[in-house]
Length: 239
Image (tube, rainbow, N blue to C red):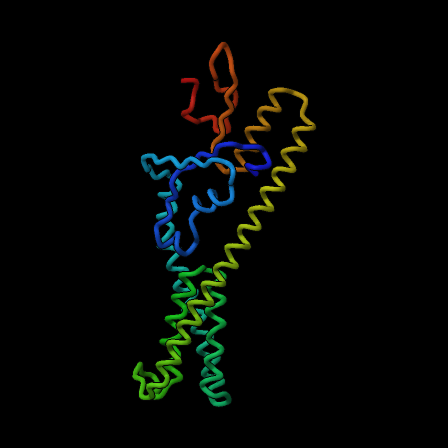
């Protein structure tokens, strides 16, 4: 978008992602720098002041983790029940394939950590219900340790790939909404003839596109004044 608009400088702030999040999800700053050439990118460091939205998000984190645990336990419980019903028909090496299903389902719904948690639950349940001696975590045959390791590895890799697919789908949906908003924006600009309505439409659509507060400044008597803003309660003024 910046290249199509002949932008020469992009100013961004430091990412709030941790080192581990950057390792798993990638660095936003690095992606912008690599994809924006030959546009110059300036990374500005400022004082971190968590907004109200972030505080609300932190309050929701425990609930999100609880939902992930409940969903993981439910999926593994249902799969374990199905495995117990089929234990007299199929071999234990066939039943282990069933436990890939809850890992994929939980990963698609709850993300990477939900899938990793499910992988741990799967190994414990498979050992407890299907490996003799039954209903204990004791392993008499050391060869099953390799099965547990492979099952855990496959579960983690599967949850990681499922999380990537989920995030790619979310990004595709965001791009679709962005393009749709741009189309509506251009259509309304062509249909608007009143100058004030035009300014209001610009501020509103820019605010909706980038999900942020927008202020429009216009020159007047040798200085810039606030002509229009998306939030009437904004503290941003002419001073």
